[in-house]
Structures are given as structure tokens and as C-alpha cells.
Length: 97
Image (tube, rainbow, N blue to C red):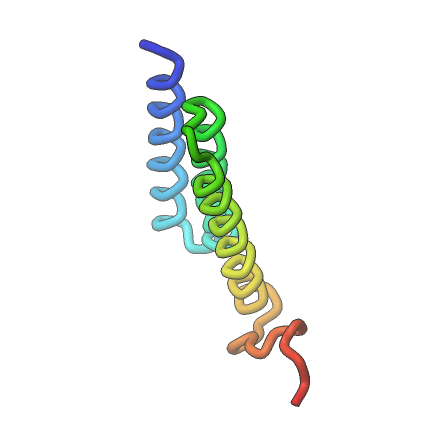
């Protein structure tokens, strides 16, 4: 099996295991949400480096967008689950009015 197929098989296996644990063990949800999301961003980065598309910048932007989304969502989840904020909005970055 070529190395790219091995990487894809490993990623799919990882995604299946982490998603199964995420769905069946509620206490791990906040941490695993971040892990699953960052793994997706890493998959985009890995694919871009391996396949070297002619126009790589859209893939880098997609990876950055995934990281930004996962970061914000993880912040929200951690604030709700571990700090018991009922709805942590506005966040510390929201300007005061």
C-alpha cells in the first residue's frame, strides 16, 4: 500500500476511534472536539504538502479557517463545561458598549 493510502487509512481509523469515544464518553467531549477538529486541519496541511497543488493558498486558508473555528468552539465548550458559564457570550474580546 502506498504511503498516502496508509496515511489516509490511519487518519480514518483515528477519526473513527475518536468520534466513537466522543459520542460514548460524555466527559471527554470538550477535549475530543478540539482533537478531532485539529486533526482535520492537520489532514488539510498534510494533503497540501504531499500533493503540492498548483494553487496551494486556498488550502492554507482552509486550514487556518479550521483552526480558527476549532479554537473558538473549544473556548466556548470549555467555558460552558469546566467554568460553568451558562452562555459565555459576550466573550472577553467583545468590546464594552
